Image 1 (tube, rainbow, N blue to C red):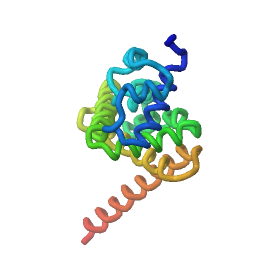
Image 2: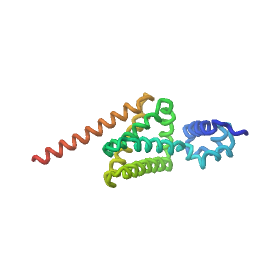
Image 3: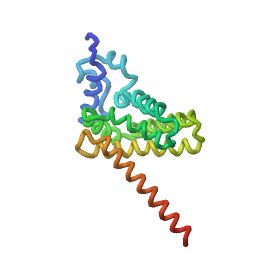
Length: 198
């Protein structure tokens, strides 16, 4: 069968359909290629294994995140710089990706192997953000804390986004998460100040 220009998209769509129908473990590469109307050879031209179908695009997402951080104002506080990166991802997680992201997340949560890979991806994102902050002369411990916090904000936003039904809500939910974080910090400061006075 001749190579198809849209092979990656077709293979990815077929894989998600089959993972949802049969489960990740019960689906083979041959099943995915067959559903897409392609060959196993075409599959392996684009992916090393069936797991990679679910993580294609991760590198582009990371690069968009880091590029936005690098373009942020050099005078911005560390956490604000990371949030600039997270804000840029709202352009990636638009309405057209909502159903795909929701289906993908359900598949990943059902398989420990995939869930572990997703956690590794988030850890790598945090490590890369911390390194970007360090190149901006942010001290190591502060860079790590800001990066971890920012990536947790992203993860909380993403989790809420796929759990609700408004495909265009990513940016709005991000701002809600940030307000919640600010409230938590303000409440902690208030408690700390009260304790200092007693």
